[in-house]
Amino acid sequence: MPRLVGINHVALEVASIDEELDFLERIFGPLQLRGRSQEMAFVDLGDQFLALFRGRRQRADDGRHFGLVVDDKEAVRARLDELGIEELPGRFLDFLDPSGNRIEVVDYREIQFSKAPEVLRGMGLDGLEKSRSALAELREKGLVG
Image (cartoon, rainbow, N blue to C red):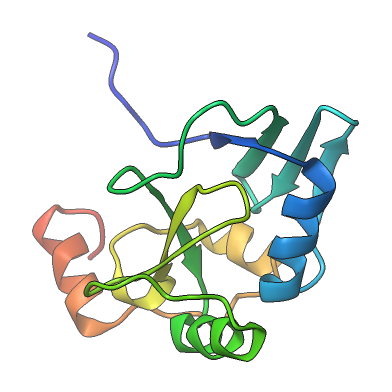
């Protein structure tokens, strides 16, 4: 039987490629693109990517969302506040993009998701370490020593 290994990319429908890229850059700084056209853009996340496609056909998302992993969740919270971007109610750091896609931000240090050391180094994040609780989750699954 084949086994699921991970997520290569997430594809989002957006109203405008330019507006979405500008929105993400205002929060996260300069983006590295794998490719770009009028109809789509691919935002590089090291060994993964975010695929943006022009043509949002759905209403704004409520519960449906995707999680972006960051090196500093509280810095994102502060940036959203600076930009006047509304944080959605709840126990997570969620907000809507201009097209109504719900984005949840999680801190790399606090979750079991892991990047290979070579990938972190290539992204300039080689000092990023997991919290004790994240390491415990990984140990429990036999994923770290």
